[in-house]
Length: 402
Ligand code: PMP
Image (cartoon, rainbow, N blue to C red):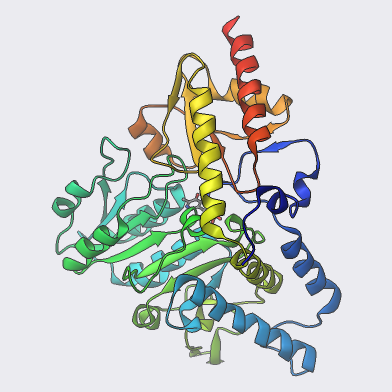
């Protein structure tokens, strides 16, 4: 394992070679050279596609593609690579569960409990399923600590609850609810649990077996991999129960005008030519990340977020929404509009995010119309914090003149 050295780590990201300051890693991480090379080599040197052709290059590609499932399984401590379904991302993985597992089971009057901290990707698919089936989405509210309030969860769960949907880490507050306890409570009433790992996976890959997670989803692009590839992990028995959602090539073994026989799991959920380059790139990202001291890297990005929070707090009207030691820092300045600030920051070369972060119910619970969000990764450095604080000071003084 390579000892974590912030400078050496940073040098592996060609996108950081220009003068800009990138503080939007919660939206998508930058890509290290190793991942870029893997995708370039794939398109330069590989021939054919997977699971279709008999020639040697295509067979080798199929093997590589299938081995990547086992690699992801090891990353999550899943028992078997066949529990890994390739998707376009977290959003598609959650929609797959909503359509293939939940909808066929959902009866009028059934309930789906969803935390108030969720990204729209882990709310809207459940609303759509509930609307289609006459079921109800029940809000699991935030507590004073801005985490879904675990003390209120037991009263929300009952024999009608089919599913609990919760994220491992919020993309706004960075808060990590006690999913182990939430899962136990949900299982006690017979409900299954969908954990959205889009933000959490890069910071703290879960042990899906120890946590007894039913479904877990993440996106490659938030863990140094390419866009357009993601993962659904499911317990084997649950995946076996699921009907295909999308139909097309290679998701079936036989078809005629009377019907079709689906492939075994996981291929029955992967209709059409897959994103092989995405799988190759994600596999390269996990291999690359596995060589680093992730605990040290994580602690470095958390320290940067803490420093930024401390220094920004010296500016008038600062209010932070950060939970604990998260490496992402959502904040506002009372009386100033987040869009005005972010525009001025962009002019100074600082890339950060402002708005509702696809989490409107969470923002409503926080009582704000939007926030700024600086999200730090291990490739950020102290100069990035300085640049952020300096640019913010000048934006605030400019806006305060009006
Ligand atoms: N959940 C969370 C917590 C996220 O942060 C995101 C991405 N912003 C998603 C889900 C959706 O991920 P994707 O757009 O890659 O499908």
